[in-house]
Image (cartoon, rainbow, N blue to C red):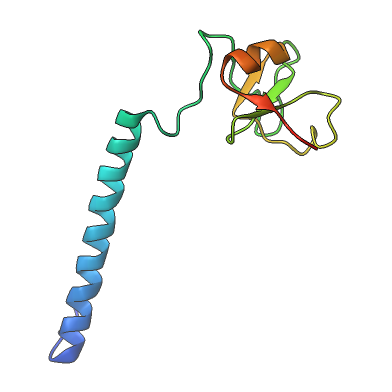
Length: 104
């Protein structure tokens, strides 16, 4: 283990303290987000299902809901490039879950 003296010791300690502060901030942030419901996906009573892969929804639920609460229909311009966080059977299901149609 290296020995730190003088100014290099202070820099070393500050680096360690920064990592501890970041870790505490991350832990508190995760707790607050879960308590406030941030980072969760609205599902409107179970109408949504999880994506079948990073880029695709199951054939039974083709409407893609995104992280910014917009939904994309299969005939939309950027449907293939959209990564879903929730998948819906219909646009009405997505709207009921708090999503709105994507603007193109």
